[in-house]
Amino acid sequence: MQRTEGCFKIWTDENSDRRIIYSIGNGVARAHEVEWLYKNLCEMTSNWHDSSWAYVAFIEKLEQVSPKGSTRYIKLHETLSENNCKYIAYVEGNSYEVSVQAARHKEASNTPGTTNKYFTTVDEALEWLKEKGF
Image (cartoon, rainbow, N blue to C red):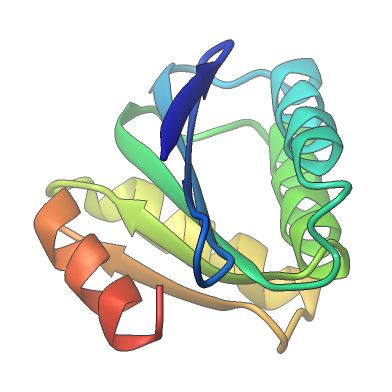
């Protein structure tokens, strides 16, 4: 089942508790917008603590963030990990700079319970999640 909640798409599989949230970044994500993102993701997944979930972030049109914004992205990784997010798939097209920055955020967050991977297309990301059980 798929539903839209604000700017998010949420996919759930009623039979196996597989859950995936999708969002699309565009332009510059300011610190308060990143904070809004992880607060909303946590609110949407607050009753999902019985099982893990995955997050697919479309970042092809997202620009690098400021140092202040970077601290919020680190907090995003920490918050998602604390809320049982197992996998984050970044669909980054060919945005090398953004994927390098996102990898730094993941490393700085020290969240070994969440696996991040970068993909050129959504099909590659979904195939990887399928291999992981999503």
